[in-house]
Every structure is written in C-alpha cells, then in structure tokens.
Amino acid sequence: MTLGKARPTNWLHGRESFFKYTTRSTAHAILNSGMLRWSSPNTFNDPFDMQFDLYVDLDEERITRLTIDSLWTAFYSPEGIEAGNPFGESVKKYRSVFPKLSREAFGTEFGEVIRELCRRVPAHVSESNLEFQKRMKDAKVLCLSERRDSVLMWSHYAQSHEGVVFELACIPEVDSVWGAAMPVTYSDVMPPAFNDESLIRLGSGRGHSSPHELLNKFVTAKAQDWAYEREWRVVLHFTDASQRTQDIRFSPKELAAIYLGCRMSDDHKKEIAAKIRNNYPSTKIFAAEKMERKFALRFSDY
Image 1 (cartoon, one colour):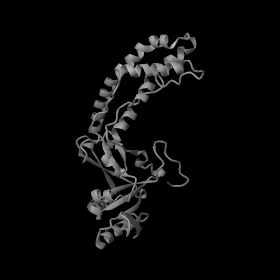
Image 2 (cartoon, rainbow, N blue to C red):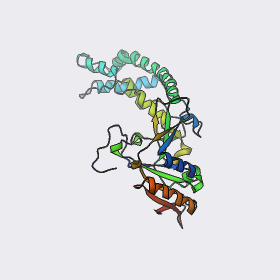
Image 3 (cartoon, one colour):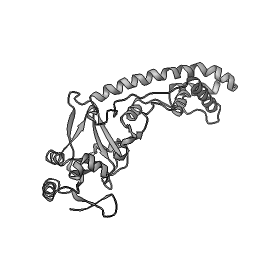
Image 4 (cartoon, rainbow, N blue to C red):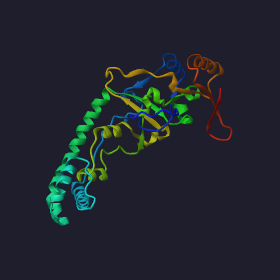
C-alpha cells in the first residue's frame, strides 16, 4: 500500500494487491482497453455460485430456552444488557423498574415474545433469499485471487501456463474498487443465514440482523472444492441486467505487475512486454519458471 496515504473508509481489508489469471488473448484485450471484465453470476462455471438459498435450522423450543437463559443472565447482571436491536432497547429501558424474578417466572414473562421472534426468522430468511436473487440479476462480479503462484489456477484460467497473471494494486489515491473486495468462504455445506449463537443474540436483544451482512454471506460462499482459488470478489450492483458482462476501466497505476506463463513462447512474451513498456511504464514484468525440485513456480524479472 502506498506509504503516507490513508486507507479509504469504504475499504474492507489491508491487502496491498490481488491477482487476476487470464488467457493470452484476454491479457491483450485488457492491456489494449485498460478495462477489466465483470461478469453476471449466471455466467459462472459453478452452478451453485450465488445460485442457492440461505437457510435456517431452528429448534424453536431449544433456542427459546437458551435465549431466555442468555437474556436472564444479561438482564440481572451489574453491567446490564448491551442492546443490539429494538427488543434489546425496550428491555434495557425497563430494566431498572422491572422486579427481580426467578428464572422460571422470567421465562413465563418473556417466553412467548421470544417464541414469536423465533417464528418470524424462517419467513425473514425466505424474503431475504428472494431479494438476493433479485439483486443478483443486475449485479456484476469481479473475481480475484490472493495468490499468483497456484499451479492449478495457471492451468485452469491462464491457458495452461501460456497465459498471464495481472497484479492489481490497492491504491488509496484512486480508491481502488478492489479495496472493497471480500474473501470467499469455502465449505462442504451451504451457509445458514443464522447459527445458534446469532439466533440467541438476536432473540435476547443483543444482536442485529443486517441485510447487508446476509447478502455478503450469500455472495462469498463457495464449495470446498474451490478452496485452492483463494478467491476474493467485488460486487457491483444496479448494472444493466440485460448484459452478461460489463467492462470497467482501471487506472494504469493499479497495474503493479504482470506475470508471463512458463509455457508462453518468447515471441509472445516480447509482444506483451513491449505493450507494457509502451503503455504501462511503471508496471513490472516477471516470467514464471518451473522449479527444479518442487512442484512449484518461481518468478524472475523479465
């Protein structure tokens, strides 16, 4: 990250750069246009990616019991309750005038309110899923990686090592859009909208349900099989839903380096290097090489 420049407040991480794997022809298109292609989720090669529903597994009686326990403890603690939603604010407001009750009496007093909150959760999740699917129709996504040396990524996305990897720097003065990139979370199961802990915090008035946080959970979930990608992604909403892709310009300052595949011919390397030196003079150029005794890549100045 550039020294002396404050990180924009909308940035979500402290990374200095990300990497974009491309074929050789795509690399030429990017260098010629100065633009990166963002894609609609329905173009992704993974049929589950942003095309699933969040869910909630809720044992109403158990969650109600645990929530009442949590609320009772916080309600009568010296510190009091730290309100995180309107129910918590209401409880906090009347705490000082509320009589001291036994755990059983407290459960009778608040049990039905908490049960009703629990009953509303599945409908809330269903409504959120409908909204997410609607918002994804006019969204475009830029997918990046946190590593430049994945042999699999070079094989799958960079033309079997004949392609290119771009290093995109996070530059505060141009407010690089990937400053708002979010890391993908990998799992064998689809993510629940709420786990037990978050449900208990919600029901006891100490947590909150943010549509933005739920949307981010939906956007950043992928199957464990994709974990090798170490992906981060940026989502642009309110784009033209009739277009499957959108090309968006980046600053030449953001192109920190370019990495040429270990199988790229010398002529193709010279062609891309000449384009970089003419149009992106501050961009560093590296060539990938196979290591002698490891199944790995190393990079040297070109």
